[in-house]
Amino acid sequence: TFWNDGFEWPGIQWGKNSMHPLIGVVDNPYQASQRPLSINFPNGHAVVFGASGRGKTTFLRTVITSLALTHSPDELHVYILDFGGRALSSLNDLPHVGAVVTSEEEERVLRALRKVNDIIDQRQVLFSEARANSLDSYNLAHTDKILPAILVVIDNFAEFKEYYDGLMGPLISLVRESRAYGVYFLFSADTPNSLTGKLYNLINERFTL
Image 1 (cartoon, rainbow, N blue to C red):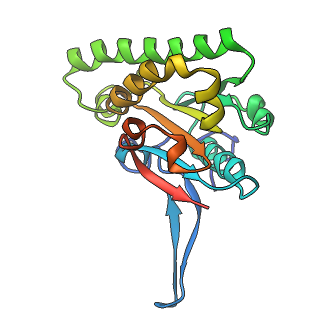
Image 2 (cartoon, one colour):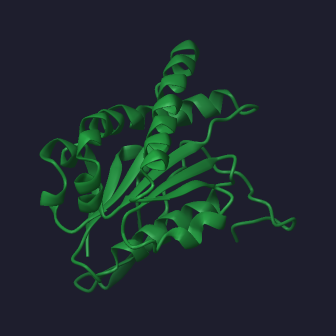
């Protein structure tokens, strides 16, 4: 069960099961075994590749829903840049979701990325003062005032790059700096070529449909 009798989140265990969404089962017929498949966001940002219609957006919805089931709205905030046909708009009612932004909403796209940048700037100061090297270590030392993990989702990265090519430099800087401060990125794209080489090399968790 995900919630207690009061229909409340029981609280994540930072450093153990935080930001490890369960997304499916790996079937190994050679060893006649099955094991859970999850994403280890503390290990790095994530991307899912696949041709149109292969289920990339469903994959993103599964990740977000899995995290929302296990993390309370105080433990997780999600910002979604929905460039894949508005298929993620149904998640807007989740209490964890701060915004679902579409490709034509230029001011909201800029505002969302500024928000993420401000969060990183604030946490650089807090972590330095607390001598913490990760969100898990910070929250374990400050149980009375935890900081939420932040997930930034960009669906259909090729369209993001087409509309906002001028933001690629700042975005890569955000992705490079953010993981240490509990801010994680999740992308979907048709092929690895949809990402720049610099961005691809910053993503450790890679999935293909």
